[in-house]
Length: 319
View 1 (cartoon, rainbow, N blue to C red):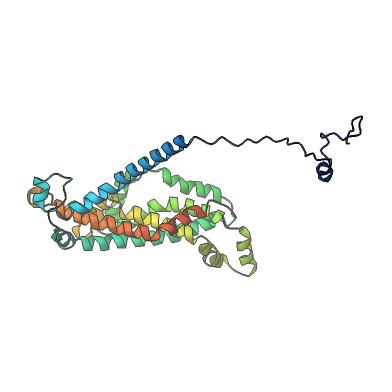
View 2: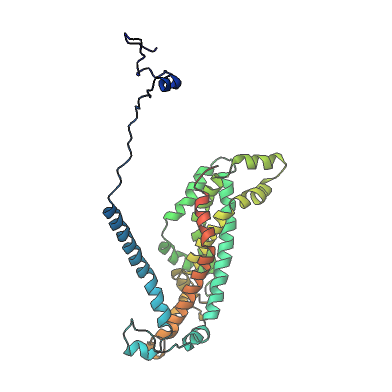
């Protein structure tokens, strides 16, 4: 209740006092909350912080961009330029013959076809089987699915180097050596655990009401998976596809272990074959081949960069 002093004037401590009465009396309600805004930093401190940030960004750009620039410029050098000039020097003239040698003599075209074959087949199989397994483990309800999911995720803890020798023995006894089959099988086995784990996260973010509506409309498991599940997690599939593509394309250890035929070499193995007479390295064609591989992959990534960023955050929020 409001209190009054002996003179009949209301006290300002009454919080229920109408605002109109306060205005009529020429008074205002007291402010009980203090202004806790942080004091702004001095202008010199803010400018110095901005300059320091710009310097760090410039250093990072130099560290990232200069090696690419050096590889590109060095790919136009002749063999004499590498032996008589400093490494950081620019080429005296543009020697495009290095790219012709890398593509034809170095057989980079055949290596690229082999890498594309292995990468695309492995990636498609991993995405299809991994997405189906994640759908069954996350959306469908059945006994033991949590244990199966943990068992599959446990495959991420097995180092790939430990299984190369047993796999080589198995492939040799089965007669799979000197073919692309061991590479595809090994890449599928290595990529499935991570794919199942991440795709289960994407399916977890899809509302269950959509799958229930599909089931009420008479849709079976396959229809719910292909018509409802896959379209809703397409960003995740696209992101995982790009990650798998780059990881398989850039792999050297598996491709070098299970294949010894030059005609079946992948790009990364083919880069080891740019040797001249008496083991002399042909630096010009080698750097030209490296430039073709690096900048082609860089162009692919720049084209799909935004889609990859959307896919990486698509499964972070449920609902």
